[in-house]
Amino acid sequence: MSAAVQLYGVVAEFEDPTPLVDAARAARAQGYNKVEAYTPYPVEALADILESKKSLPLIVLIGGILGFLTAWSMEYYIAVIDYPTNIGGRPLNSWPSFIVIMFELTILFASIFAFFGMLALCGLPMPHHPMFNLRRFDHASADHFFLCIEARDPLFETGAATELLNRFEPLQVWTVDDD
Image 1: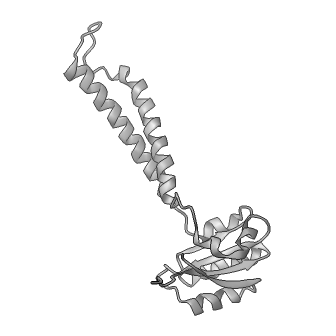
Image 2 (image 1 turned 90 degrees about the vertical axis):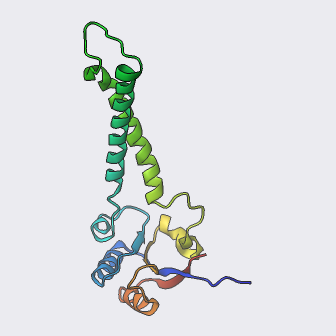
């Protein structure tokens, strides 16, 4: 019983970042949303072209607010409901004495949400990425640039994506299987 091999995407290999940026810009102009670049060093022009994941700040903000509310409700419950102790004539709900713990739990929850949110957004843990099926992909960390148009894009068609990438004279264009 053999499972049908699914296509991950069409990949082009470039020697220089300039045609990579041009190909990425053309792919986005044609309406492709699932485009990913793999480069040996950061290429600043790609950041504006490729889809960026901007949901991490919202995840961290939610974590911080949740930490703040957890600290406040915990301290309020302890100081007002569970064990009310009048010290120095202050009110039971003396919020200035809560500040240190609220700050600490805000930072703790925000950092935990940042860590696990980043793992989730990056799709980790992923012991094997489909791009590792490409034999020449080890050059992505050394001296070559790769651009992948993923098959999960709604507009994806193998022939059209291959034709688009071939217009920018890559070293080679491959299809990559998702297995």
